[in-house]
Length: 323
Image (cartoon, rainbow, N blue to C red; front, top):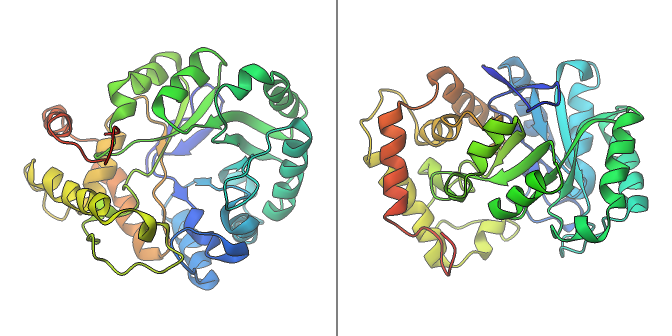
């Protein structure tokens, strides 16, 4: 497993990280990828560690803190050998938010208890309205104070869109951002965000690198998702576009013997120097093996990356006005 610096934070992370949203299952009424088996989740976490995955992304929202508890259980004896990012600010599965300093301070304390740790490597605001950072400058002051106090090692913003990420970096000096990016959603490349992160050495965490699993080739528009799986809530036409996207991108380049669709999608993300780590969701040891293999294969050749960029420009993979 190769590693990359997380911007200028001083942290080094595995270039394939572990997204733990799904590990929260349906605890607390959460909607992720349906029910999760804790024993299988712990096996996947331990297997990921053995495979060299050192970066784990979570949030207090995931399973009402259950994902954090599993991380605490898995890594209580090896805390200094992993990098954990957690998030706060979304206070319910309905999307209600609270980014007040008092709430953030209390949320961090609760997260650390669940993580069985006295610090978080990265503490992220969880998809705040970007204008809120202008309206309430005490939010960033709190994050900086938490870092000085040693409660966190770095702070950042998980953003709702790549355009908001540009604002977070250029206007508010966020040293770490978390943003959507994948073969079917290349907005972070189009708007110059990835280039900016590379140039200014901003830690860039890529979420949804497999587009909710659709880029693995394992799902279709009519896949019978669990009622607690968020993919069931997307319109059938949107699911169809995502399912077809994976096939189109795979067909656009010369097949590599043994390479899976997931590995192609992850290698695409890793082909940009501005990317620090990509965090596919994983639920099983088999998922870990598939995703970790992308690091061994390395970034895509420049000509293949360009071909995939051109294919994206020729299609619309999102309903409505989005890409």
